[in-house]
Image (tube, rainbow, N blue to C red; front, side, top):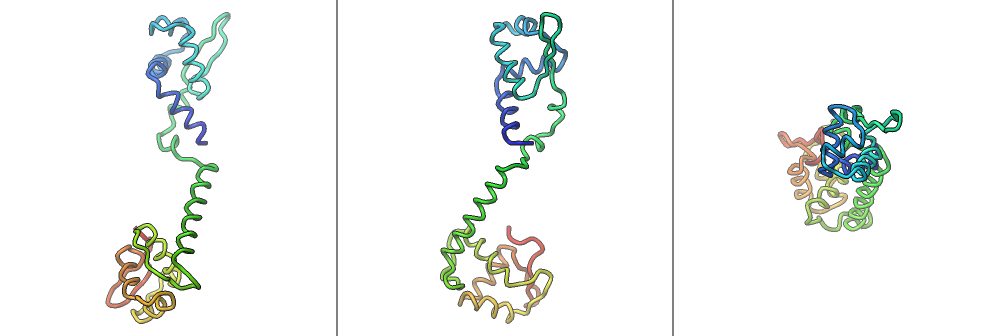
Length: 187
């Protein structure tokens, strides 16, 4: 679902009067005048709320002689909360783009001439740096401790710190002085 449609649905249902109207329409189709009488609201107020519900595609309407009959759009109510909050549109792309831009900024700050100049203190930045260093290792391959040290030394002198942090963050696993990348990198 698109984010704009989801927002309209959530906003439309956030008003108590509209919730009462929707509840009533879930039972049976009704006219504006019936809803007005039922909830002791002015017909213009009910029309306003029905317009908001219609814009969110929560109600359907059909002409019945001189009146307009409103009924609930049950297909919308069959959507799960997951479907209402999961978006396959540009917003997700923009968020991922921001994350990637931040990652590149962190790497540019802490790497100079392909060397790690300092280990970040902030956990989020540290994880970005460690995941970048993890690219020196192939998934599924087991490395001896000395081989891990040698690969890390190309980037940073304190190979013990990097090796230990990779284990703490779950990027690598260690067993009998042998290391390998975890199946799922990072916390």
